[in-house]
Amino acid sequence: MKEAVKIVTIGGGSSYTPELMEGFIKRYEDLPIREIWLVDIEDGKEKVEIVGGLAQRMWDASPYDVKVYTTLDRREALKDADFVTTQFRVGLLDARIKDERIPSLYGMLGQETNGAGGMLKAFRTIPVIGEIIRDMRELCPDAWLINFTNPSGMVTEAAIKHFGWKKTIGLCNVPTIAMMAEPKLAGKDPKDLNYRFAGINHFHWHKVFDENGKDLTPELIEHINEKNGGTPANIYQAEFPMELLRSMNLLPCGYHRYYYVKQTMLDHALEEFREGGTRAEQMKQTEKELFELYKNTELHTKPEQLSKRGGAYYSDAACECIRAIYANQKIHMVVSTQNNGAISCLDDDSIVEVSSIISAAGAQPMAFGKLPPAEKGWLQMMKAMEECTIQAALTGDYGMALEAFVLNPLVENNKDTQRVLDELLVAHEKYLPQFSEKIQELKAAGVHTEDPAVEDLMKHGR
Image (cartoon, rainbow, N blue to C red; front, side, top):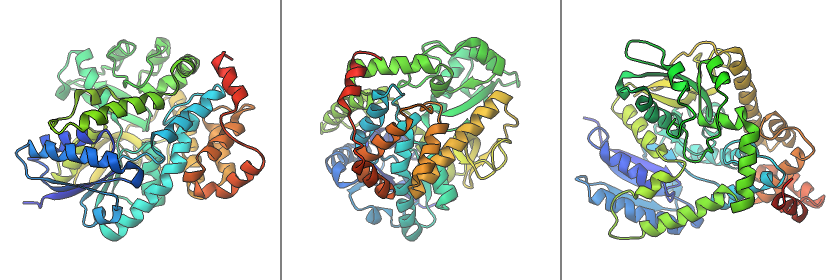
């Protein structure tokens, strides 16, 4: 019998932590846990204490004797860990507000993981993953790193390819949501469907087959614009052009709307921004309400309100992945892992988001084969953008950062591209030490954020 495990969650003060606890509780018989450590930083002290209290109440209400610890000392928590999960946000939601607000002021998409904001999030996050891995190498050298910190694909690529932590798996809730919705649309039991996913995080496609091997993809394409068609709650459901999807005979993920119907999505995002501010500001209010609930000492279950956030089911996917590794279950999951030939048009050491078999050996990617020409071209361009972003995050190379911006279809190469990059760098100075020299140069040249003239322009339409 295997020993019970120690799990450490970096970013333990997240509002998603109760979902993580719920997932571990319902899987305890296959994944016996000895202790859970919730780690956060000084700015997150109050939240981690509140959510830690709820987490302990959830375990106390279960039949299982599990101790939850909270700490601001990452190294104390990591010692002898078996699994480390990451769900942190460098700069908290205030940083996300800047990621969304500054591009929006220039008529670009302000979105958490795509476009300019997603690249700045990578710049802030990748060095921190490196620091965590440095500590893990010393304190828990055999631990698995299960990452669902966004941008998940880029963070996972940095962990595996650049920091050398091969026992890393990246997760996303988008495939999970699709696989929850589609069986109902096809009138099938989920266990009778076979899935094949291929792409990168927030930019993948998939096909679906029934128990007899019949391709159900064409049938499911016809449902994709319906309300319950598998799009995450945080993505505006602009209509996909059906002729495009029928031609490719692949089901795109919800985030493809930002690329396939870009103008519609941009118009909606800018209208939302003018009327109600950024989505991050809305999330700040939601989070405040959730933590008020979490303070209730009578509460010992995950509140229903948590499922309404865009990241719902991330935590459940993490629990399923950890159980599959611990119990050597050999189950199908869609994860970010090393390509190793699964997608023929990308390098073997690229990190891709694909159907994989999860076992004690980690993720074994399943071969998808060749993508059609258009999807192949899209994917190669987006992977090049990711690679440039990662290099810029690691080195602080401004030119490489600009290359990433120019490559990204949601930023475009126009008169404001460099200005948006410059303002974002200055706005996030505290969390971008690798760019410090360039940031000082930009500040000396008068670069600042929140230009009143631009803000006034946005309020009254472009």
